[in-house]
Amino acid sequence: MPKSEKKKKKKGKGRSSGGTEQVVTRVRLPIEGEVLGIAVQMLGGSRVRVQCMDGKMRLCRIRGKIVKRMWVREGDVVLVSPWPFQDDRGDIVHRYTRAQADWLERNGYLEMEEEF
Image (tube, rainbow, N blue to C red; front, side):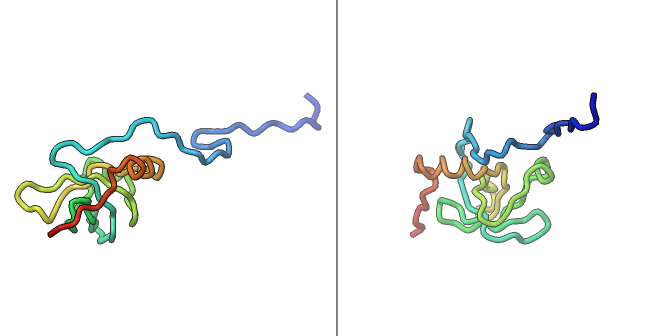
């Protein structure tokens, strides 16, 4: 092989082809006892203040099973499982990507209920 020919760079794991469009394949919907929410404030120690769609502000923790795999930031749409014995607290069980959050909003899942 002549020296004048350059080797092509291979795209390794995690390298994209330049497109930023995300495709929504499946979206986990809340089941009985779960509620959608928006992360409002990061408190440290795997704790997050979340404004839930049922109108309540909850102090939530990121479950230990997913704390290293899922990075939650302020403004992220999350799925919260409220504690049965203390309604103002809960566990974050899932974080939605931006494309999934847009899908939830288009289909009417992200509507805030007013608390009376």
